[in-house]
Image (cartoon, rainbow, N blue to C red; front, side, top):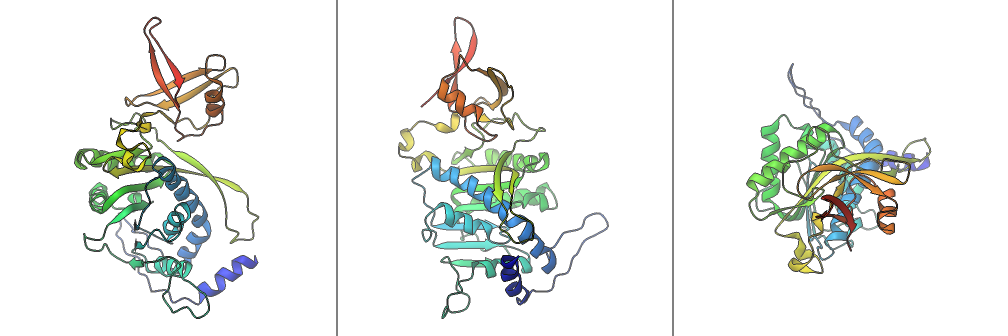
Length: 346
């Protein structure tokens, strides 16, 4: 409760701009005013941060030579992705933070959370270098090594607006573009729209990094494809903190072959062609695991991993895996038996 009061008291002293909610009888555009911006901070700051860290960690782990120097965050909200990026990569390596958020109250909270409060610090000084808040899209020459947008596509009026945003974000991407949506069929469908547009219009320079191991039509279209992450709330309420699971869908694409950021370089093994696990939990409680895999050829298949016929480390890994994990195995055609057997890869 004391933490909640310490945060709430200075926030109440902030000057929130007035907000007018506009709309029509058919469509109402939701705007964040002072009250629901504070509610969003309490309810969504922790899960959004956990999701962003989970996604960005995958980039750092699989592309260890990539160190962003600039971040462009569209629909930045509370500035959560600025915190996440500076958590995953060494603080200070990102020299420019471009945060685009249409909501005035959200921007006020973001500035408050990012402000440096040491004694003698000049006003409008932030914890991270080069923080710039904007209400509208800046000029086209403002780009980022890491471009992110979270939970924004479903808030747009229609497919045409979503495509315009995707086109703008892709044109600003120097290295990686990260799109995040809620872990529902609607969120996955919105990301599929973006994925299809990028495949058609991104050119030969566009490479899918995650989660798809291919560039074919999605085998999970209409079914949804999501990952999960566990997190704890930040203690901004009276309720005790407890572990909660957040479902999310995401898409990461790179401008240029992302293998240039690996130690093996462009000649390194294309690990993105390993299957992805799309089962929420491994099915089967006996000597075999039934796991749904998204395969490099675009198919989604349920594969049975028997305990006796599967490499022991691979079996243990799969038994404790979650949806979204990379399955370190590949399909091997057995010409004699005309069957397909999964084998472990290094």
